[in-house]
Every structure is written in structure tokens, then in C-alpha cells.
Image 1 (cartoon, rainbow over the protein chains, first blue to last red):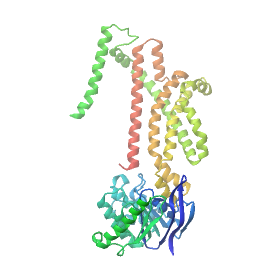
Image 2 (tube, rainbow over the protein chains, first blue to last red):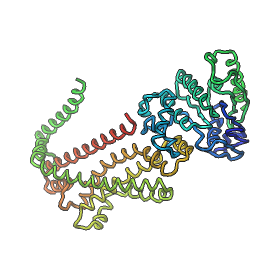
Image 3 (cartoon, rainbow over the protein chains, first blue to last red):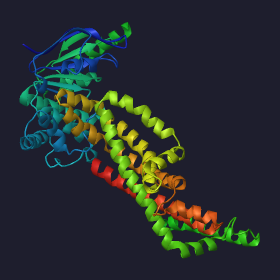
Image 4 (cartoon, rainbow over the protein chains, first blue to last red):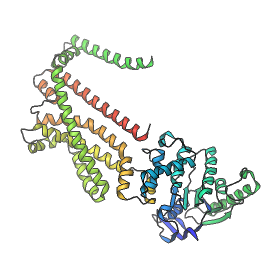
Length: 246
Length: 255
């Protein structure tokens, strides 16, 4: 039983094809990475899965109810006028959870991303990495069945990226939502995902699908193993082939 | 030390310019109704300061009343426009026409509507007309300025229209509302002065009346003193609203 499924979907903006035909089925508890060049429709695929957009052709099947889907965007997308706690509590309050409960669950979610003590901070008082953690906490606070991450670390430095990647995997292990992770970075895709989907330049189609070695979350030193390097090479080769064909 | 220099430099320049003005006017024997020396302006200020302060207060009171009226109407209109695209399309051309029509041109009409005996009403109305557009335009822009990804989050979590307005669009608009008030505050003073020129003064004489009165008597030094008071009033009001804006933004952003 899939949590969400795209079946032969196609999306065009102003007559120009952006995505598809494209199919993707998400099983419970897996992490799928979508990699591909800019403009290949990765983010569009994510919005279809979230139900924020409808395809012009094809079908979207969603097992998760609206409140059970969470999205993390490329920028933290926090409300500057709200504290970290209120930002995290927002999805709960919008769906009718009482203020007190929402606050308690928000504090717990902030603690899970290592931000205990910063509940009252405003986004402007946080570093880029911390703001992204608040954004993650906001996504996780509703215990989603479907977690969609749209290049969440693109604006961060390499050290912060790696730390956050491990954090996401650790958090994922707690509740195991089906996760789709959009990224430009092949290494990040192979590190984060159980399955890597390589997309062609827009309108994006699937060029290759590769299962990654080892179970999630990754053992220490996984990035230096030959299996990791080999998978990275395979994904890069598939990407390069797609670029050359376009 | 640097701060003292920062203050001293402009003061020194102003003093030097005043000295040149004084010496030049005396040396060239310029008639005082054309250009009085600064000492005469200072004398006029010293002699008139009570009536100038009273007049500045009257002008300020008119401008502030106009600002309150304009603020309420413009933000209500902007809110309506945000809630209803049809209302927005209907309001936009009206607001633009109101803005591009010179206030001086509609003054006689407003004067009639307000009643010849109530020029102060006409002044408030005209100053409000001038102050309306920046507030309306800022509020309309502000109410559409919410981060599109935050809008998507509100979609995702099934927010209703009320939640979206109160918890996303209104707070997102705050910086634009503050900016609109600041610009409108300066314009309200301009509007109040222009309107007083056209509509007359009634029982509460503002700075425009002081300028006109001095001009009719060819008392140029008193005219310059009233102009100086007007400039100071405008600058003080702008500084006040700028401080309010800064404080508001600091509260909004948390730093």
C-alpha cells in the first residue's frame, strides 16, 4: 500500500512541459531522493504529492490525509513575527489543536531538533542552520505520514548540510514517514535515500532508479565506503547521460 | 570625538552661510521686504514665537486628524480589496484618480461641501485626501506580500480564510502599513497647509495663515520665520513616524 502515488502525471506551465509523463509510488517508511538538473520538475513533482497543485494529465493518489503531509522548503520559510515555538505550533493551531497542547508539542519538537532553550527566539535571531531546524520541527510536529523536502539544505554550508542530513535521518527513524527528498547534490541523495530517482532535463522523466547500499540511517564513515562511491558514480553517470541526450 | 565632529560640521556650515547672508544683505543694501537678514528673521521668531507655536499646533492638529481619517478609510478599503478582487478592481482607478488630481483643484468644491463657515472641516478632508493614497497603496501591497511558500503551508494545513487573513496576511503587511503611515504623515502636513491657503482658516489659524498674513503686509522676515516653523514641524513629524516605524519593525522582527 503506497502512501502516495503519481501515475503518468504531466504538468506544463504556459504550454511548456515541466514534468512528465512521470510515475512514482511511495511505500511507507522509505526515503526517495529526486535528483536532476534545474528545471526538471523536481519541485513540481513534490507539489503534486503535497496536493498543492493538480496535474494536467495523469492521476495523483494520496493515502495520507491533508493534515498528514508536511513540506520543508528550500528556505526555512518561517514567519518573522512569530517565535520559534509559535512557528512550530502554527500547523497544529491551524488544524484546531488547543493553544496549550500546540505549545507543548512545539516545545517537544524543538527539543528533538536540538533547539531546547531557543523556543522564544525569533527567526532573525537564529542562524541559517538553526532556522532550518525550526522548519524541520514544524514539519515533524504533526507526525506526518508523508514528508516532502524541497532542497532543504541548498542555502547552507557543507558542514551544516552534513549535520542536518544526519539529523533528518535520526528524526526519520523515530516515526518513519515516507519521505521524498529533492536535491541537486548526488552525494546527498545517495547518503539520505533508500532509493534514488534520476530525472531528465525538463519536462522531467525518470532516467534511472537506483537502490542505495546499506540500511538507513547510515553507519559512521558511510561516505568513505566503496559502495557509497560506486553508487554516487552510477547516479552521476545516469545524470550525465540524460544531460547529453537533451 | 567623531560624533562631536558629526554634529559640529553641519552647524558650522549653517552658521557660516547665515553670516555670509547677513553680511551680503547689509553690504548690498537689499530691501528687507525682498530678503531680510537672518538677524531680522531671528527677531521675528523671537517676537512671534507664541503665535507661531499656536499656529503650528493648529496645523499639526488638522494634519493628525486627517491622518487618522485617511488611515482608517485607506486601510479599511485595502482590507476590502484584499478580501474581494472585484472590490479591488473597482477601487483601484478611483484611488488613482484621487491621487493624481491636485488637491488645490478640488479644494473649492470640498470647501462648499464642508460649508463656508467650517473651513477646518475642509482642511481635514483635503489633507486626508492627500494622505489616503500612500496608506492605501502600501496596505494593498502589504496584504499581498506574504511569502508564497508560507501561503502554501497555509494551504497544506487547510487554513480557512479568517486564519489566513489574521495569521498570515495582516502580520505580513505590517512593515508596509508602517511605511505608508510615515509617508502619509509628511503629506498630511503638506495637505493641511495647501488646503488652508485655499479654504481659509476659520477660528484656528494655521501656519499657512501666518505665511499669507505676513506676505500681505510685505513682512518678509515674519514669512521666513513661519516657513522655518513649518519646516521644523514637518521634519519633527517625519522623525516621529520614522522612530515609530523603526520601533514597530523591531517588534515585528524581534530585533
